[in-house]
Figure 1 (cartoon, protein in one colour):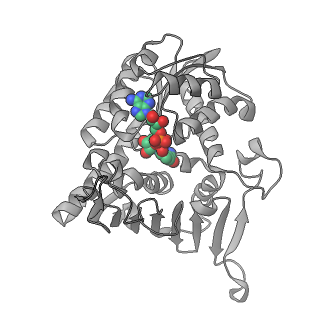
Figure 2: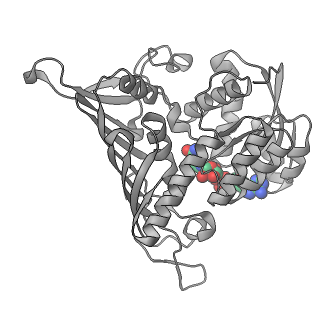
Figure 3: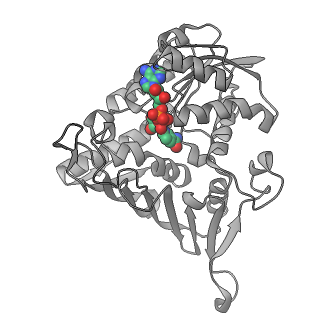
Length: 374
Ligand SMILES: NC(=O)c1ccc[n+]([C@@H]2O[C@H](COP(=O)([O-])OP(=O)(O)OC[C@H]3O[C@@H](n4cnc5c(N)ncnc54)[C@H](O)[C@@H]3O)[C@@H](O)[C@H]2O)c1
């Protein structure tokens, strides 16, 4: 059941990196896809009235302020984009759902499993669309991976490896900040590892058994005014896991990997071939199959083009490449499909909760140094 609306009023909380990505998506989605209701940019909230007013001017929102509860109470707002830091997601999403709004909330879902469970319950009780910002599942070539797997191109999958590496925590001289504070969550596992989990769950399915090792490359960090403070989160995590149908796998996460910028490197091994994909080069996929003569076998590179929908919605020419913000436009379109009750490719709050449970099992395994079943 969905809502057929002539127009949808948009509210946006937070206007940093992700806030701007959501604003771009809301501004562009109708021009790109040409369908769906008219969108009204109604209300924007930031930490101060001045910043909110400035951003509302830049992004084209009608009203602004520093009180997110006023945005949620605004009858003109039908859907709320939540792009604030992780620790605000639960409170804001639950309040929005209870007020009868649809929600588009950035990942990770929450900073605790208990909060994620409350969010999922609120979404179910509301009957509204509640979608998480797992944008990487939206890329056209990631859809191709799914089609290739479904079509049996590499045969029966038996092993998968996925690594996510960036270097925003790589500098040991960087001062202690929120990402080193336990208030932000576990560290690499939830802030970061949820992205590769969204890919694995979409392509193959959830893990059934796992063991995890977390590590701190820098146990302390400098604090302003002198001295060192103990780091409470883990920037590195390694997971060995099993999935249904005898699939084994490895997940490796590192937020302190110098030189890595947005690496989500995926290798899927089947009994007839291999698929390789890396988010740092997400306009290409490598495919190896055992078809043809052994002498000429090798990986071939498939470049994204208009034949990989919805690439064609942005660019008619192949090989020109989509960018990160375009994934957000596609995600926004899928959210609108969900609101309208159409089939939608999204990670909603119930699928998000499965990811959060896997993260929780990994953290427990790391603490207790054992295996966890899911
Ligand atoms: N989907 C992705 O690929 C992706 C990438 C980066 C970040 N994120 C997620 O997006 C969220 C935001 O991250 P970011 O990088 O945009 O952070 P950011 O610091 O750039 O932006 C956060 C914004 O929220 C504002 N804010 C904080 N508290 C607020 C409040 N109470 N009311 C209104 N505004 C408030 C801040 O002033 C800031 O402008 C995080 O949950 C993060 O995990 C997702």
